[in-house]
Amino acid sequence: MSTKKKNYDSYFKDIEKFYKIKSDYEHKYKKEKDKIMGNTNYKTMEEKREKLSKFKSKCVGCKKKVNMIFQNTPDFFSITCGDQETPCAMNFKVKKLKVVPQYPLITTLKKEIDQNVLDIIKLKLDVLFAFSSESEIGVNFSNIRDTYMKNNKIYRNTLQTYTNTRNREDKQEEIQRKKIELNHNVNELKEMIEKYKQTQRDEFITEVNQIYIDKIIPLVEKIRELTSSFQKIEYSATEEAYKLIKEPYTIHDLETFIKR
Ligand SMILES: [Zn+2]
Image (cartoon, rainbow, N blue to C red; front, top):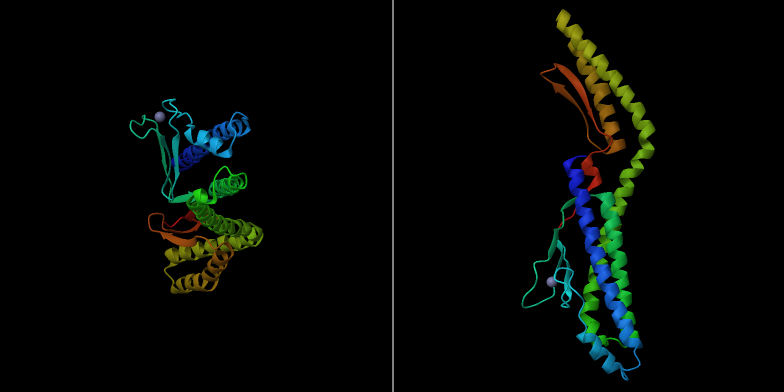
């Protein structure tokens, strides 16, 4: 496995881990909330809210009931101890990569969007059941909505380029035919160069130029158009030969540069 691939794998594993810890944390909070809300010992909603606001979840680092702080910014994911005075050493931080392969990115973005939608629903339900007031959730709500909209935009764009890249596979047959033709022409070219070397006759050089200009260049252009990818003929001085440099589509095609 290449180092790059390995790095991406551990990167996406870290992101999974972030969501896993966050969702466990939220699940426990919700269980506690349901318990308080369903507890008939508290007579009013005010009492219940008061009780809930005092509840703190356990930090996975120090096991103290101090809550945890989850951050998901454009630059990093992080989890830190919620103890404001003496936070424990637990510090989970993953720097977001700038260039990542599209496929895992799509999956991750989809998860983020799903999470954003859940967060929005949760906030709305909180208002509906009067766990929180409209003003309490105001800022929180617009933050989540903005994040959701941003994520959704990147998601749609990435999905689009990914689909476009993959659609080129449909043209593979035609590309294949053109490549065979191109190989044939390159061989013809090599033959002419050989002949020129042996005979030193100028007509072979004219022939080389003609094959190159009339056949090879248009074919390379056509293949490039079909694959929209990297395709070129290179002259290798060490091997004294023309070589067809080819890739179905470059790794770069399948990567997305996320501008910040
Ligand atoms: Zn802690």
